[in-house]
Every structure is written in structure tokens, then in C-alpha cells.
Image (cartoon, rainbow, N blue to C red; front, side, top):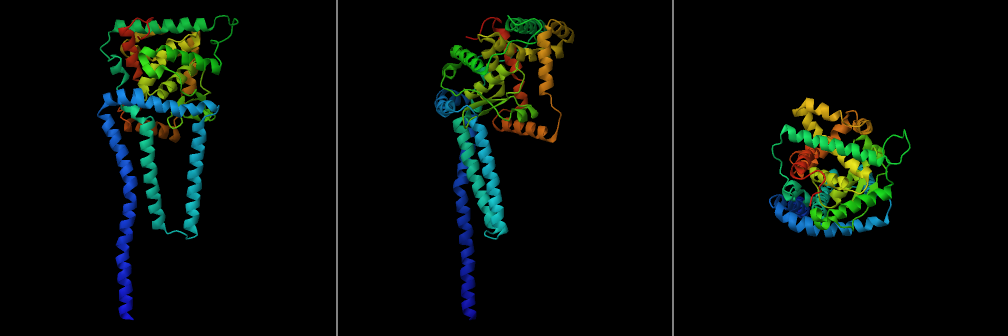
Amino acid sequence: MASGITRRTNIEAAGRPTSTLRRWRELVAPAALFCAALGLHALAGQNPEVVEHYYSRYFYLSVGREIAFVNKFFRFSLSEVLAVVVLGGLTGGLIWQARRLYLRRVKAPDLVFSCVRGALWVAGAGVMLFLLVWGLNYQRQPLAQSLNLEPRAVSGDELEAISRTIVSEVNRNYEEGRDGRELGARGIVPLGRAELYEVIEASFRRQAPLLGEASGGGFGPPKPVYVSRLMSRFSISGMYSPFTGEPNYNAEQPASDLPFSIAHEMAHQRGYAREDDANFIAFLICINSSHPSVRYSGHLRSMSVLGVLARFAPRRYNEVVASLAPGPLADIQASSSFWVRPEGHFNRATYGVTDAYLKINGVNSGLKNYNEVVRLIISYYLTRPAEEPLP
């Protein structure tokens, strides 16, 4: 008996390393996929010219159009549905696994290992898919480099002249947008959604020399988000979904901000991932559009240039702002009131996640990248007359 017990114990002891080794081997494939995705990201970051000419201008545009084609058949946002499905699946999976653990149908170590393995597969496949369908666009050449709009020192006179040009365009397009509106009515006449989409899309097509193939059609339309109130709570004007190819936007935002926000998300859709690049393209698309309300939105957003003037020449800033018409001033105040939300744990978490997301994707300035469009707008006015669009 003693000999039999000893023999059985030896067999069990010999079996443990084999089982452990088998488990570790099961982690090799998902870990390798995750490492391959990280390696692709790092390699792309070292070769922005290759990403620009082969991925962003050719491969991505083909894939992006194929993904976005499906969206034309749905009026609602597929990304919202996808988010609900994923959230529901995760919740259901957690409940199911908790029930299995409670009923002792699975041991805790086995459950932990299964979760780690599943998380590795999801992380590896998710990151790789994200990079291939859109994410590598973060590694393309910055738009300032592609358009030779590298910032240079600007004098106080130049900054004041640019600011006056912007205010003049804001006032002019505001009045043009009010043309024919009854006396006393506040604000410009907004476009309907379908007409607004078409005006912005047409402006993209006119920018073919700048955007190349990205200026053409074939992409899905912008879509309002059902949970726009929640987006407003977190000061989010829009969000591009790379897995569904949809430029989603907050439908509750002020009418003066809406055209610019839609154009911004459509710029993301066309492969311009950096926030300053997407903002600059939205600026160009709006100010060169055929409708005054859209031009007004673009010029109104470029008023951020005046913030630079305020820091360096407060007296000149006050003089320029004094020339702003009451209507645009009221729109600016309404927009500020809408977007300024009380600080809270969720808001700080949202800002932190967005900042980390941008930095992980190679945008070293993080959230500050949104405001870096100011340098591009200043360079645009320094290198070209205000009335002349980019060639």
C-alpha cells in the first residue's frame, strides 16, 4: 500500500508542471499578438513619411470607405449600438462567471487564468484592429509639415491684423446669415441637417488640391448621438468611431458650433487623427463653404487666436474685441456657458482618459493638442491673404 500511495503521489506531482506549462503556452499566442500590435505602433512612429504616403493616403482611405459604406443604410449611430452590445456582453459575462464561481463550477485560479487569457486576446486583437482601420493615422506627418505651415515668430502688428481680419469675417458672415430674417430675431438662420451635411461635403470636395483622395465622397454621413445630453455633461462635442466609420456629434450643442464640430469629425473620418490637424481642416472647410452660417462657424472658432493677442497685447485685444458685433458676442457667451461644466470626479476622469489616450498615440501634448490649432491658423494668415483659400 505504501508503495502504491507513493507512486500515485509522484504521478500527480509530475502532472502539475505539465499542466502549468500548458497554461503558460496558452498565453503565448495572445501575448505575441499584443506585442506585435505595440511593435507596429512603434515602427510607424519612427516612419511618418511611410505612414503618410502608403497608409494614410491609400490603404486607410480604401478601408475607411468600405467600413463607412455600411453606415449609409442606417439613420442611427451604429457605434452607439455597438457600445450597448459590448457593455451588455461584458456585464452578462461578469454575472455568468460570478455565478459559476458561486456554484463552485469553476475554481478561482482557473477563472483568473481564463480572464487573463481572454483579456490578452481582446487587447491584442483590439489594438491591432484599431491601428489597421484608423489608428496609424496618428503617426502620419503633421499637417503643418505637409502644408509648410511651420510656426514662426509673429509680431504684435501681425497678430493684431490677423485678429481684426477674423473679427471682420465673423461680423460679415453673421450679417449675411441673417439676410432676410425678421427684425428682432436673434442669431443667424441655421441650416437643416441634410442641407448642412451637403454644404460641408461640397466644401470638402472643393479642397481636393489640399486633401487629395480624402476630399472625395464615399464616406458615411455624420450622425447625431442619441445620448447627446450625456456628451454635453462631459463637454464632448463629437466623437469619431473608427470601427464603424461614423462621425458622431452632439446634437444639443449651440447652432453656431455645430458646423465646425461636424467638419472636425469628418476630418477624422478622412484620416486626420491629430486634434490640431482635424481642427485646422474643419476651419478651412467651414470658411471656404458656400453658406454664411457655416463660414460663420469656422471664423467664430478661429477667435481663439485673440487669446494669444490678449496675452501679449491686452490693450490691442480690448480694441479688437470692441469691434465685435453684439450678435456674435452673444453667441460666444452662449457657447461658453454651454460648454463650461462644473468640475467633478467623472469630468476629471474623462479629461484624464482623453489626455492619456492622445499621449499613448504619440500626441505628446495630450489635451493641449486641441488648442495647438491656433498656431496653424496664425501661420495660414501669415502666408496667404485672408480671402485666398489654401491651394
